[in-house]
Length: 370
Image 1 (tube, helix red, strand yellow):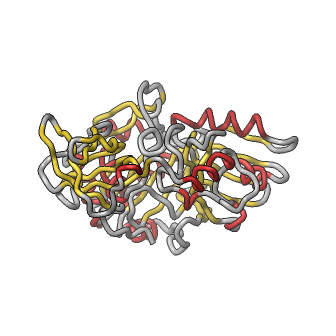
Image 2: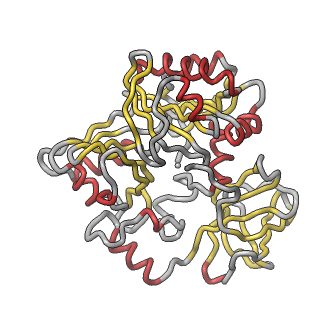
């Protein structure tokens, strides 16, 4: 799910990260942990795939749309069909502009017909809130709650064991949420995440974040719980083919190009960007997001050119080394006119050497979200 330069804000958990030996990096206007001492990205990645890891993702935006008809209003703006889900469920959706480009990708939590809680990306929160607030009808309030809450992502096959040890609910279905309390702190336990593993995200009032973080780590000791930074978050999400806004989705990359058409309510009569997206879908996109899996040694990175023979046929949008597969993987926008299909061989120029890669459809690893 963007992000980039200039870090002015700090998580309410910043002191805990410093104590754990975190290496920090600017991300979406926040100073966030990239990795921690005592293992680094590969150890943190492995903890999530094999046990349980905890990420501080408090940089993610938070916004509330409330008032009579709030859910219907959100549904007229964002791409997915909020009418498909019931209160207590969450939905991945997109905020598009008139051209069909993606302003942001968002998780919408439906509390009721008059209450929708949104989690956009950090760098885009103000813009999403601005667009919704300008379009809101009388009686519907759009509030930016970016710094009012912290978010802890507890991810991995032992995540349910950890939360159960704290007395928190764990049995709810994927993309649903329940309210609970931990040590007097009211929180929301969401069956969501960005790793491809069974996991939860805890939305916690900022004032209670440290107490919840400490409780989670105390309870997770029997399963070797690890604090995980944005480095592992990136390798985990790339293995799943999950998009990062600003790289794999953007105002210049539509959901049709990014294979995110499943997050569009095509039968809805109204949402931002509908006319442009319907037209692009009918005509076929000029480029499409594919996965690339290295067959040579080399780590692909964003913006590297993709070649078929001597012709440039696309560009990598996200690339990394997969700790699970022990090889380079990437997401890349490939020109439709090149006629490439799954199994085709392309090359990527990595530090002056052509690295062979196989075109594939993500995910690169088997998902375990459910």
